[in-house]
Length: 382
Image (cartoon, rainbow, N blue to C red; front, side, top):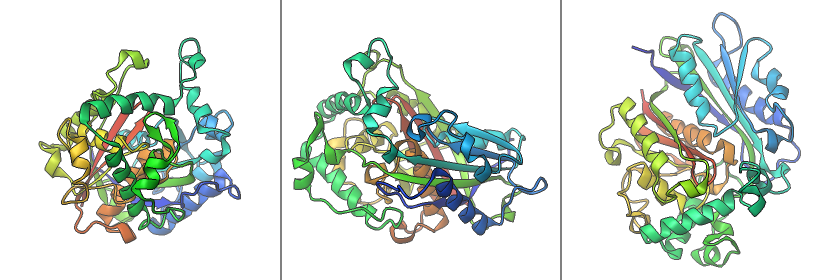
């Protein structure tokens, strides 16, 4: 049987709209130094970090091979360094595979992004589309989620008022999270009067531009006691990608998320996701996605998103106590931050937004237009 793998430590910078005074390396160094202070880990050949995995994006970083300038901070001049350029939670999948294969015992993950450097986030996501058929008509991620939101709202009965409630609750939770110092409360009226971006997506339905960095230290079961006495075990992982062209997909079906969740649950031995978790952290870049993804994960019944929004916050699982991606995390780090926040909950180190007696959690990441690629990680307290 493959070795169990646990998360030993988590570190995050604050997430803010424009960290113009800080370079990528400085953000990553803050994370690395925090992890070293928590665990005593180093880059020595005998007991140190065997592999470093960076999470970054060439276009947001405005340079090719965006991990190249991070090598000193990541310790890559001492050993192996790899890069994840899609959704950051994939780095956990990669690190898990590296350890369970016997390749290494200890893996450092550090992700960074400064969305503020792009003149427009839509220009960045526009590049993800086919250059011959879909770029010429101006598609970007925001336009794509407009199509998906329309389809999902038609199918689920989700209303403008319920969308506003998702945003209000996310902001309320974010006020308790010291990693989001710029968060402000909003009213439902403010949400419903905010400018339209891509019908029915309004400005306050969309996650804000933000800069920041996040890191985790993973270790094999036989090494983990050297770094922590409160490990969080990775119990299941799964991912799935839908078709590339929007016209080839049923945008409201949750097809790839259902597949990803089933794979993670099977590996974790979870029969009923409705009762399996104390905390669920979903990557809700847009307000409608929180109920839609919860349906896809099997936490809520299919088609119940509209009615279930009103019940969020009652009982378990607690959804996005951190505020979620909607409250302000860079897109490519969204899932990795969700995993970091879920791990902190199980370690009992989530501070002002700690969920009492949390012992099992789910973290979710998404990337691509209209939820094309989904990843699910399940976690359990030691």
